[in-house]
Image 1 (cartoon, helix red, strand yellow):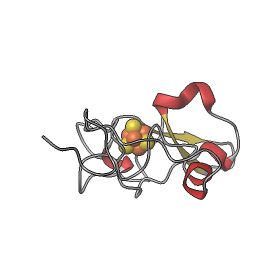
Image 2: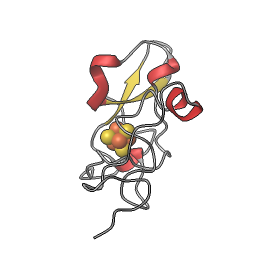
Image 3: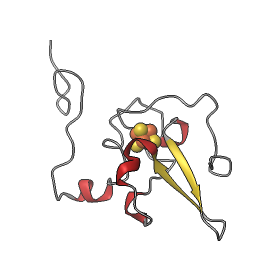
Image 4: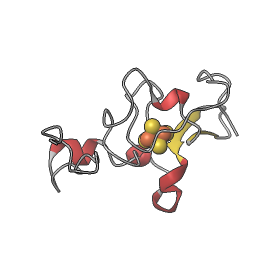
Length: 101
Ligand code: SF4
């Protein structure tokens, strides 16, 4: 039995190295984007949430790391980002215009 080079024996991808570009860019994601099922995105994940602010703009965040959310862009996610290993299917995949609440 062999694991994929970037995953451990349990199929879990390691987090990006501390301080690496990937780690800095992926603060809003529960796990490394792209470590989840192929073809899926944050937009089709039940954990992606839209936060609407007074101006009407919507920011998207991952509910799994809600305890780390900031009010800034550092913990935002992109709905088009490839899914991470914590991805779970949304019953009805939503678009950016519908995924608020
Ligand atoms: S795929 Fe889901 S669990 Fe992973 S970062 Fe995106 S919204 Fe969060």
